[in-house]
Length: 517
Image 1 (spheres, rainbow, N blue to C red):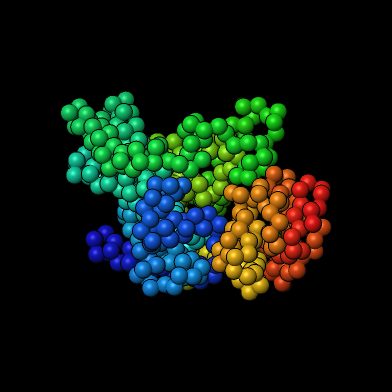
Image 2 (cartoon, helix red, strand yellow):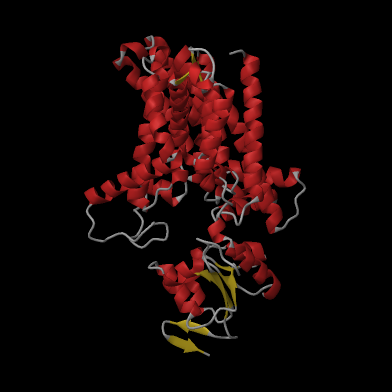
């Protein structure tokens, strides 16, 4: 294929991605509550507070800077909806631009003929739209990460040092979006270390040592000052637990998907973590595409000049899988969103497998009323295949973002209308506080809520009232035997959580089972 043909395909794919992400963003029931941190950080940066917006922030700054820039470019109002639109716009723009390196990575690994299909399949899996159109940092991270993977593949395939500086630069940008970005130079160093073991991947020794030096010194110069200012690779508790610099989550910690059995052995913990990791990868790739992944990897042999790139990709996938296992073993959670690095390296294999299988399927011409020759599928057949996959995966892929939590936006509207300025609201998610423009108690300080005699408003969903977690006990203590004054959604759909609004009497606080008046 010519460069113009590749460029035309990329432009069309970017247009399709813009349509998908734009549609998803416009059908957001409520943003994921992790986005509250990113918006808060962007607001601090917008005020010029680098201390609070950069040094003291839990999250890395690339995406919050993107939100701040979007807010200014769009001339968005300083309102909850204005900041959410800005955050989603920044995420969607990064998602559209991400198509370019994703296509190029697929070209490097499986050839230009199937690269378009790799992008199409990546857009069809549910995790893509639901993550990249939400207020989350993944699309910003993946934009820089995938560019770094592409330049690394070019270096490994061609051995030209011109590709190393951009690899290091994109790795640094990826790290400034999410701490996982450092995996890129580490995986490249590991690939260089493994190359001498196989004849097909060897580099001449002077070039080998120079490459390793580049990959050690470059990232240290670019991100070393930020790491020094922050006091570590990352200040997120998950990163610290992963690295072993912080103890694992408590058995009933909020981040755990289920409480930890205190008698559970370490071996069982890691066995469960391995199963959860495989489930996360399966759900991020989707079960229907997994057979095509296997087929694509089989059709890729013999590797020939792609031996080094496939060694590099294998190391990334293996290291990511081990990190996800460790994440669940120490933190108690692992979702498809955490497996996106693995997914977008496997889905191009699915595209190659599907394309190769389709090209091997032939139809006798006499079945079509033609001659006795055999015919392969043309554009019309591919339209039917893509339409079938879209219908098959579309139920989840195109569902409104966070539809199950839609009640929090309506509860936020109630808070804005009924709660006077200065009054506190308790909501462990923080969502109704954000949409209602009020302050109060969230998960971080909910322990203080039961003793606050001035707390009059509580927003909580059913799972938080009856759950096994310590903060659920705090919510039960605050609510007591009160009846809700409002319930949202008023007409809930299937799988939508009911969100209750409680109003407490004036000057009433609970401490255990006692009532203080």
